[in-house]
Length: 291
Ligand code: C2E
Ligand code: MG
Ligand code: MG
Ligand code: MG
Image (cartoon, rainbow, N blue to C red; front, side, top):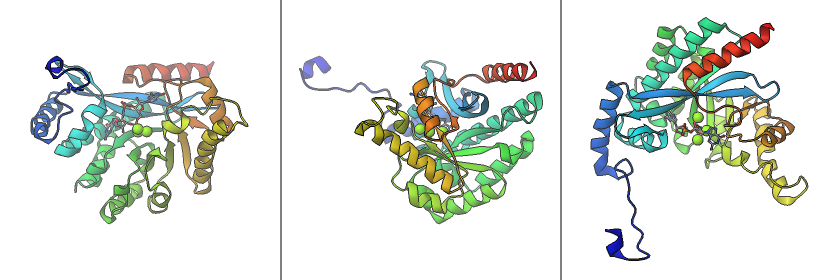
């Protein structure tokens, strides 16, 4: 036990979700079972116009409601789903469910209520030969117009392979938009932007954190703000939208507005929530518009 090994011997008690490859086979089976049992559910986080605070879109974020473990966050199973290939059927579920829900909101609230829905897509899914057909089918079966779907892809060097590039252009040709997620954290941000048919970049939370700390004119504060400003200007110059992620307080909203951001997302503006809660938000916005 940890005690017997004595002081200073760090023993890590991992759950088997965190254990390496040999656990993947079991986890792969567990993920498959969970998918068939309907244990994956989507939450939706508002994407907000920073000027008038209207909800203009939502990001879909998957959760695993495990019968014994309770709610499991995506970072604890997405990597294993990617390694085992289960991300392909799981991602297909996320895509179809997001489109179905978005089409329902479109029917209930009309075309001006919610511009877009944004599921996350793993690069691994782009290597699946059926990916483009799946996207097309998710749109056709739900009736959601392609321009209301935005696929979020985490920027990574892997996005630059010729095969992946081909797939992204095919999806783009359907009228679906692409967002570079966690922008600024990858090693290839700038060169990727040239090759990638992106419509928007999502400024990573790490560049929003602390943006409001200190005083303008002090080197540290200026440096933090310079990155956010530069990303905003680069996006603008390339004709891309820039969205700020991970906004946790009002002062960050103020600073981001000052740096030219008009769209943002974060706990301060709305946590990831059940679809019903988004429906209530949209109903509230409709009442406010009528009043
Ligand atoms: P992401 O796509 O960058 O999503 C944003 C994450 O930041 C979400 O975590 C969200 O809940 C969290 N977040 C949003 N606002 C704030 C804030 O103000 N403060 C803080 N501290 N966090 C905030 P979540 O839901 O745990 O998802 C983590 C990551 O898992 C996502 O990062 C995405 O990369 C991945 N993911 C989630 N759902 C899916 C999915 O359906 N498919 C794939 N392939 N990946 C997914
Ligand atoms: Mg995302
Ligand atoms: Mg992100
Ligand atoms: Mg992220």
